[in-house]
Length: 306
Image (cartoon, rainbow, N blue to C red):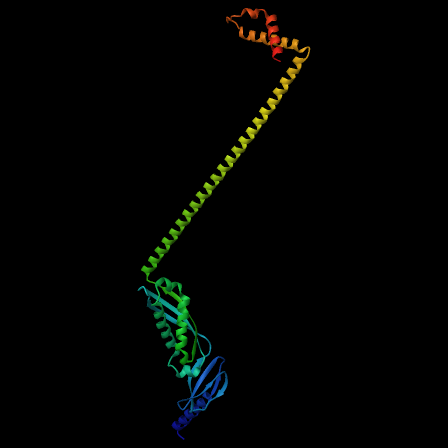
C-alpha cells in the first residue's frame, strides 16, 4: 500500500472520529441549541447531555435564555420645538422562544436596536425639550411597549429600556444654564423681598403692641394717680373737718376764749414783725395801737358768729 493511500485513510479516519465526537453535545444551563436535520428544524436541545446523528443533524442556532443588556448607540433626535438632542440607552431583553428567535427574524438583537432607535425618535419628536429631559420614564415605557408588541413574533421579551443620556447642543445648554441662573436669582430676590416684608410687618406689629402697652400703662398710671389724689383730698378734708370740730369744741370750753385770744395775739405779732422789716415805713391805724381792745372785739365777734 502506497504512502498516499495510507495518508488518505488516515485523514478519513480522523474526519470520521471528529464527526462522531461532534455528535456529542453538552449544553450548559440557560443555553439552548437549535438542531436541523437535512435542512429542517429537528429539535431544541436544552441543558444536559445530548447525542445527534452525524452527517444528518447539524447545529443551526445557539441562544442564551439569560436576560441580555444591549447597548443602543447614541443618535440624533429632533424635539417638537426643533431642538436636536443626542440620545443613547440600554435595552434589556430575553429570549423566551428559541425557535421563533431563530426562524422569526434574522438577527433579533440588531432588529431590536433599530426598533428602539426609531421608536425613540418618534416619541421625542412629539415632546418639547424641557419635557424630554424631565420625562425619561415616559419615554422608556413607550419604547418598551412598542418593542414588546413588535417583538412578539421574534420570540423575545423586552423587559425594559433605560435612557442613559439626553445631550442637547452646547448653545442650548448655555441658554438653559442662563435661564436656570435667572430663575434662581429671581427666586432669591423674591425670598429676600418676602423676608423683608415679613420683617417689617413683625416690626410694625411689635411697635403697635408696644404703643398699646404704653397707652394702657399710661392710662392705668393716670387712674392710679387720680385715685391717689382723690383719696388724698378726701383724707385732707376729713382731717380739716376734724380739726375744725376740735377747734369748735375748744372754743365752747371755758378756757377756749383765753386760748383764742393768745393765739390771735401771737399771730398778729408775728404778722406785724414780718411786715415791719428794716428800712420799711408802715402806717398803723389808731385802733391797732389799742391791742387789748382789738383782740377783745375779735373774740367777741367770733363768739357772736358761733
